Amino acid sequence: MFQIKNAHMCEAIAQHFSLEESIKNAICAINREEFVPSKQLAYSLDALPMGADQFISSPLTVAKMTQFLKPQGADSVLEIGCGSGYQAMVLSKLFRRVFSIERIEKLLVEAKKRFRKLGATNIHTKLGDGQLGWSEYGPYDRILFSACTRSIPPALNDQLEEGGILVAPILDNQAQKITRFIKKGGVLVVDQVLDRCLFVPILDGIERGL
Image (spheres, rainbow, N blue to C red):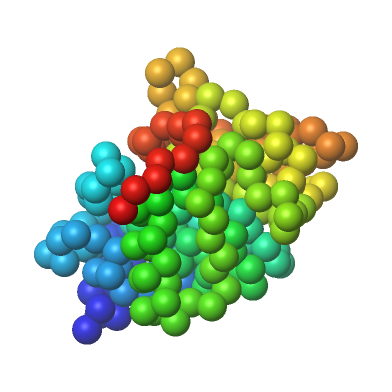
């Protein structure tokens, strides 16, 4: 059963990163095999290709990003870059409302099928340019980038609640670093540079076609 394999995966993650119990429980509740092309590699700590020149992040990276987001006490989260849907699914176990934007139509359609199959009813998705955010449902308590950016678009600063947290892989001198921001006085302030990472870059526009 996937729960046993997930437990072993979490043990492997814990060797590199101290997992909070709530984050561990969220990861262990999800059948990762549904999100990856190879079931044999589903529980590897490596990033895996998933088509459209995209990757599903390593479960270690997903665990770090989720924990750095400090979900405790937050109600809503906006994810930029739905991809396979795995990160959004983890977030759905920790937030009442999850909003996820994906620019590649094919990936979004596949992610939505997975959400329906797994019975996730609190994940809301949109085909769009994530750099524009999703203003209709903002402001959000948390915003998470699942793609690398050089800077935070102003629209996303506007859509983050005052005192809210934004976590993003920031490209700095050719190195990607997971960076946590807190909105104070209407401005995003760097709270902590947390870890090195490797994400696909954020791109403009949308890509249609199934």
